[in-house]
Length: 315
Ligand SMILES: [Zn+2]
Ligand SMILES: [Zn+2]
Image 1: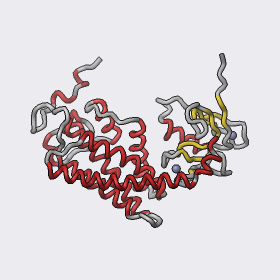
Image 2: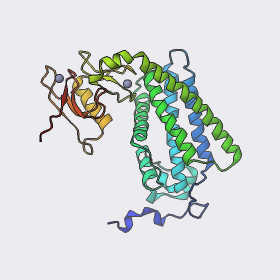
Image 3: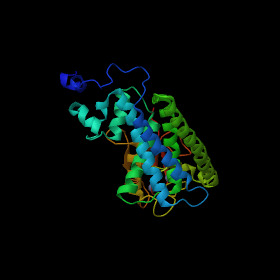
Image 4: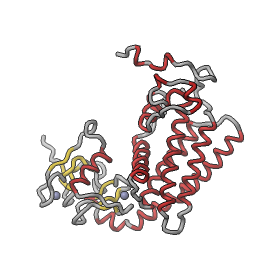
């Protein structure tokens, strides 16, 4: 049952432009231009590494600007629905604070929720995951000084660029022809670069295809690059991703991290770890897992020895 407090927008005056939103709204172009600038910068940083071993600096700014582009462009759509929706607390929003930019902006997760629930712009779970794993990489790079592998960034960037291209053409339409031209130019540049990145990702998968087949039974999706290339239980110390070369902690730690990042918060998603019978198997057996060899049927997988347990169905 909804009480009066459940409708915080009632007390907020409509934006100056007034009136109710048209079905496919035009959006404040300064915000869109800002987002497209970030997007262009992100692809240029990715392109700067072409042919050579990419430098950390270029990768870092590619991730930072891609993340900024995502946030700005998603919020541009939310702003059009109603400007108060980009405030952390829309109930406390004021037009004056909005116009001077003096407010705490809502988180990315909240942005996605409000887009879906209020603006009826729905992203697929796969798209949401692409956005949240890019956000994690961004945090790791900026706050903890981690370095990322070029493969990891390129695989992540390919997913996010693809979804932003769709998002911009479906949900953001600049009001004037000159502005449309700018958006189209950036979109063309991004599309071109996306093709190149996808080709790199495919080449890399082809390069490692022998290993991919060899380890298929205990190979799972990598939480960092999201390619199905993380081999568990092979190396004596830690699981390693064949695609992005990321190494994960001790098997027990890797199993937990994998559960959280790939399956989700155990409060909402049913998964657990158990002990495997192998020597170092305490807390390493994770359920449910899909492997390269078993992409549909759930199995239990030991992150220490790589043993696979198939559920026995009782009649
Ligand atoms: Zn990986
Ligand atoms: Zn085991």
